[in-house]
Length: 373
Image (cartoon, one colour):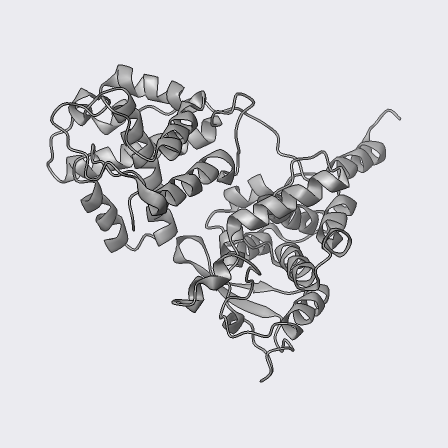
C-alpha cells in the first residue's frame, strides 16, 4: 500500500497496519484505517505539532477540524502545490520525499473523494463530515493508540481520552418503490451507448435483486456466476460472495435481474475477469487484467446523475438500494432473520436499522389503522 502523504508523524503506524493485516482484516478495512490516520497526521503537520504534543485539547481541536471540513481544504493545498507546505514541518521531523508527484497526487484525490462523498452519511451542509464519519475517524485513532499501549510504547494520552462525539438522530428515508424502479430502469433513457446502457442497467438490477454492498458488486468476477460454456446464459440464480469481514454468503438473482445480466454478458467481447468493466480510461491497464473493473466512485456518480434527472428528492445512493431491498422485502412480509442472512449482518439489530417504512406504506397504515377516521 502506498502512503498518500510522504511524511511520518505517527510512530509505528506501519507496524500497526501490518498487525491489522496479520489479524485477517480486509485490505479495504486496512486502507480505511490508513486514510484516517493520515488525516490526523495532516492535522498535526498543518499545526506544527508532533505526536508527543497530543492532548485532550488537541483532540477536541481535531474534531472541529473534521467537522468544518478543514481537512478537505488542506488536501486541496497539497494537491495544488504537489509538495509539503514550507515551514510547516515540526522540528525534528524529516519529510521522506517533499515532492508528492503525479501518482501520490492521484491517491490524494481519491482520498478526497472518499472523504467527501464515499461515506454513507456524506457531508454536512457546512462541507464538513457528519458526526458518524467523525466518530469513525476518532475510533481509528483510538484503536491505533490501543495498539501502542498493547505494544508497551509510550503514548501522550490514553485511548480512553479520545472521546466520540454525540451523533445526530436522523430518520433515514427510502424512496418510494416506483421511484426506485424508475431509477433502475433509467439507463435505458439516459445512456446512448449500448455497452454502457446494458452494463448500468445490469448493475442496478443486481443491487436491488440481491441487496449487495457496493464493494461486493465492484469486486464481482464473471467466475462468480455459474454460466454455460459461452458465458452468456446464467444457470444458477445463486451467487456465493465474499462480504464484509470476509464473511461468505449466498445472494439470489431474480428472474428479471438474470435477464438483464445475460443481456449484458452477450455483448461482452473481452477476456477481463471482472463482471463490470469500464469502457474508457483504465482499460489501458494491460499489465494486470484484474485491475480493469468499474469503480465504486463511478457507480455513486451515475446513480446521483440518474436521481437528479428523475427528480427524486429522497437521498438515493447505492446504499439506498440496499436499504430499499430490505425495506420492501419486509413490507411484503419477509422474515427478519432471512433479511439478516441476505444482507450478511451478524446482528438482527443491525438489520432492523436497514428496514425503514416508506412514506407510502406509512400513509396506508395510517388510513387503515387510525382509530378516529
